[in-house]
Image (tube, rainbow, N blue to C red; front, side, top):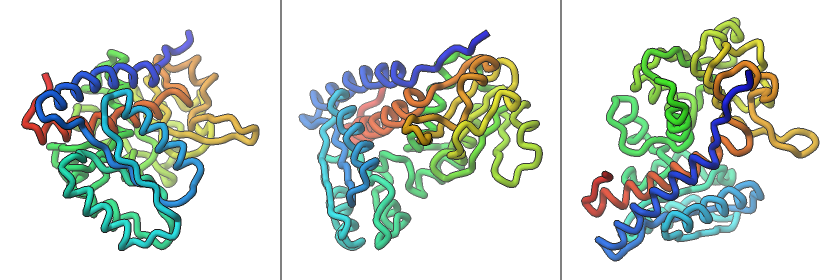
Length: 288
């Protein structure tokens, strides 16, 4: 029996619809729309596409976009000065610095310069630390989106055996923490994990973020598991695929997310969600 599809596009649309209502409420109370500053340094084609997609999603959700495109020659000091300016701008509630940055700029220094209260990406060490202690403020967008995708299946997270493939600070580690807080039993796997297929087969929730095309095959998946594919890889023919070998795995899993159209749209939706959440907190408002 084929797995049920977790449609990230449809879920992201639902999020944007809700955010449009919240954004209108903020505007009605404060006279100011929720605002996201987008900062892009250099000419990386993929980064330009990513930022354009994020800006389009903002417009659909009623979020003001403050767009900054800087040349590849921008110095770290110049970028930090712009971030400081946006930190102090009361019309800006979220700041997005698109990665990767040029070699002359230290990404870690830049991301730490963003105010934790405007950290729409959820990358700041303060926000990561709050997640570790179980009192998150702004959560990293991709794992936050993955959690929403799991919830959409109706499969309970509590008590489940969850396996996370990948231990990055952007996806693997925060996702494992979010699952742990929902009372899943969590295993994080990486390149040194012994007998990886056997560990994966134990997973009722299998979350894959390792950046290797079609790495997870059907023999690695437990019958009926929820499989969410965070990876995006380009094949020699130019087509996109995930870290999961979709067709055979979809015949074994209970639920599966596609690539494209799965985690990607939800990552953007959670960026908007964090921005609107910041604006509502700033206005002393709470979500219903």
